[in-house]
Amino acid sequence: MQLRHSAAVACVVVCANAHADAPLEEVAIQDNSIIAELKAMRERVDALEKKLKTLEGDKLIEQDSPRVSMAYNRPTITSADGRSSLAVRTVVQADSAHYSQDEPGALATDFRRGSVGAGSRENAAARDLSDGTYFRRARMGFEGAINRDFNYRFLLELGGSGTEGPTRINDAWINYTGFAPFTIRAGAGAVPANLDDGTPVEDSLFIERATGADIDRSLAGADGRTGIMVSGSGTRWMGSLAFTGRTVNDAEVLDSQRALVGRVAGLLFTDVDYNLHVGANETYILRPADNNADSSVNRYAVRLRAQPELRVDSTRLIDTGQIDADHLTATGLELAGNYRNFMFQAEQFWYDVTRRAGQLSDPEFGAWYAQLGWVMTGESRRYSMTNAAYQNPRPYVNFSSQGGFGAWELALRYSHTDLDYHEGELGLPTPADGIRGGVQDIWTLGLNWYLNPNFRITANWLQVNVDRLNPSPTAFGAAPASPPVGAKIGQDFDIYALRTQFTF
Image (cartoon, rainbow, N blue to C red; front, side):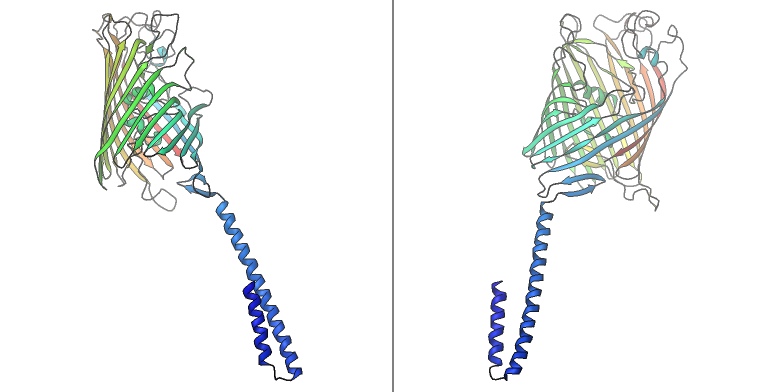
């Protein structure tokens, strides 16, 4: 404003001097013209000042407003300073399956059985596993950051394991990242018990995890597990240690289980075209849950059992039954790698149970699996050091009406799980310290079609073999529910399964 006033005064002075000797009529005309020009100039300056203030105001509003983005179609709101965020998250997986079994017979002659227990639904279900379709997972919620140093996630599970039930908490935790590269997390959620468990469910090579890995995670990990965890990762390493209790979905017990879950992993070799992963993990149940203060039998029990790597029917075909335990140790070794569009992954598990009563020997069980993957369209599975696990490939060209086929992947897995300990002989009673949990072997052939980063279709063909002896004449209730002691209660069959998946 001072500059504008000075310019106007200078102009008047110059003009006055220039016309000092001019006739009065001419000077008056020229003065009127100058005044008009000055007035027009002042109007233009006022307009420019108004426009400048408007632009400055718009800039301030823009700086204070949150930003909305769609990274891989995930809606995300980020604060203007970038320190806080909120992202919508969902995982929807619908599974269909056909179980190709021998026709069921009467309980008295058809000895195929599921989990140990009198009156169990699985007594009949094992002889005729249910075909059908259901939502394996239907998770919805949100996650994000608060003031940069805190992250959070709240995720609800609306899907189920074959039966209708109430909505459950899958994740409800908050973590602090101010001690980089380490993070402290508290709340409820899955802890990484092994390599297969550390792989996000949406990135799994097959419809379900391998049996050994699934048993391992169920001991003190799994979804909705309460506890506190410290984890960290660098360019070539990852580690985590968690103290866990019950899951938020567990039935009430007198005292919750207490356990430690640890995992370390790293890359021995890494380059643009390849990675070689090695790792180790251990779960230590310090004290099993107290199930019944008035009972001295199986008061602190652990139990190992599993479905045949699919959940459309929830029947468990291998089962140790309740083992009264002082503590349990599960140890695992990991090996994985990829070269361009080829990858392999394998894990070995040992489960050692220390009984509370010292008269019987302590049972030991084991499991392992190995799997291969080949992305036929040339993409590679991405390795994440944060999870120390592989992620889905992203198609070079998404499937669409304008052309493009997405990414196609062929996969093969063999898993072996042995829940027998001193099982004894066919047709004879179980030895005093023996456990007849059963041996399960599964071959799985898989085909994955990644239409785009959000949509995936998976087809699996499983060949299942269960070799198991009946542990006692009352294991499944009074006859004919329980076959003769020592009788074969396993079976062989095929499963044809299909999953459609949507995530963001």
